[in-house]
Length: 324
Image (cartoon, rainbow, N blue to C red):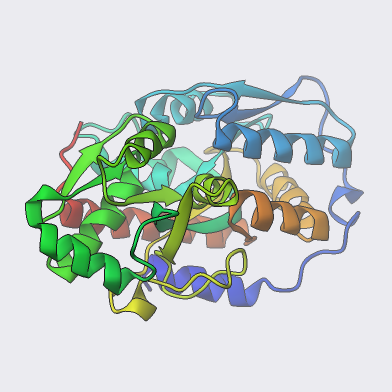
């Protein structure tokens, strides 16, 4: 089963959430602080998400959860910190499972095998990347953008500031028969600045960043990379609906060091399951992050991680991404 089909199956199987308050029936062990490890710097969109989850679960279980930022190496620094931590569940890696899996193919010598060194406890959310143009761009639909890009040929550029953006852009280019040149940027804001300056024609962005910029009236979202419309942006059509076959979606999860006792793994799964069943949390993910709350069992999450590792081998090949 592909990662995409597995995501759909899990989503269908987990529509019934545990009622609030049920997951914290058993207290988490005490004795030392709990840490959520974030692979991005403070103030980033990912950091906001990790801190939000830490605060909510802290309130739920009545224990302080610290957020430690360990950016760098595409998330490998943060992930390796968790891998090398004591396998007791007090150190939790909260990050994109898609990116964690992708690192197995983006580095010539990955520092560890994510499939065996990390123990997934739960999925958290899922979201697509989105195709954007400036608000006043003449293209209202993907086919109109495609026509403009074909006319400009290699003179047209597009911005990308993340590996998943590169993959979305390359799939679009190949399947639409475009010559558009990709330009790499360090951050989404840098990419947006060049869009505003007229130096790039379009940009794939993560959903949270794109939604915030759309609210500010800077960009227009033309399509999502997922194969089906998502609840967070039901009005936005998919690339597939507009004639470009694509089914790319990212997911977030929680991970602890391999060897963590199953009782602790199940506790964390219960906490995330309980939290993600709350309407205020579901609304936060949809309105602020452009993602859908998404929960599964530890085994289902582990199976999804393995499937995502396999799928990223094809993504990296399509996008012709060199290994670091």
